[in-house]
Image (tube, rainbow, N blue to C red; front, side, top):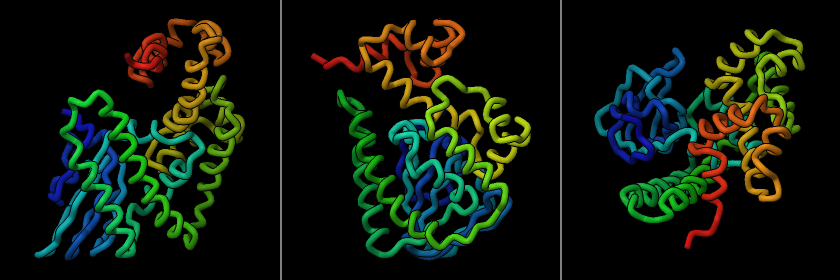
Length: 272
């Protein structure tokens, strides 16, 4: 069973298999513990924040007596769709894959715990007409509260892995909006003068995510903007985005938006 939102205080529940589609945000509130991620052992103490997509990949969890945590997990794709494609979060995922721990001040930890509690209190309000929008707004607040201490950590990061240059170049290329018409990994590999296999392996190793996921991440805002423009027919949009056929365009929309392009357009209309 997949999870969309979950709040918990169970440290040993953070790597449950059903959380595989989520991004985990965990704060240590007392004591200390450890876990293994990407074959490295990490130690956490009070006010340490752990941000980890696919938390089921963690193992060897160990908590000292008195350790206390609070965590909030949300569907990873849901969170990604909340942010613009060129947001700080894209580059941030690279460093978090290297080191998922961010040390917080007392004030930062308190603010994030408030975010967690607000989210935890509203998880069960699924009967509300605008449930997803409400949870999205609260999640967005939480993520921006995380960006601040993460940016502070990155300002002092001395990481010099030369392969990170490939990641930065890919992100710069995607930021130009080229994914509007180019969505094949081979295109980006050619532009970066590497093989598709090397590009895929490098991106996966440094970020934990595929090249295709980043291409799609940048394509979604473009697609949504086009679908929001009623002057454009679906056929015109498919042509502008270089889809081979209208049916392929429709399948792409359904896969990434969760509904057909026509249904997505209907969802943009005022409810009444």
